[in-house]
Length: 178
Image (tube, rainbow, N blue to C red; front, side, top):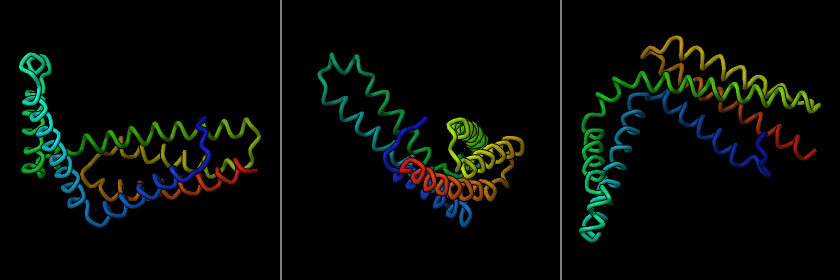
């Protein structure tokens, strides 16, 4: 069982889930392209840092570091992400499936938390149970039907689970104080 003194971290995560869900609902292709391009830029920066580090090392140290290889590969992958984001978006289906698996795992974790709350005699376990059920159901739907039309469903699932987690975190904070 997770012990936190304040639900602020949980509330920030919930707010991020809802915000990402809303943006995905409004403009899924734009959001995805922005994320892929952002990852590409990050990879280019990391590649440049690796190359700079390589050339700042002594020749002996550099020969053992593989920084040149890492830097070049990160730059190539970064440029690919930036210039071929449409291709990456078309192959995004496996990522949706991974999200479904993650939602299923999180749902099972919430289910255990619900059972733990019941076993400890807590009375306000219902919101956690609802959040667990939603996560499990949404995860299963995504895994069983991972079509490209799932963008809307993915966005709605992020919003719903974010709101359910928010309610659960608020009530959980009240429980820990009582």
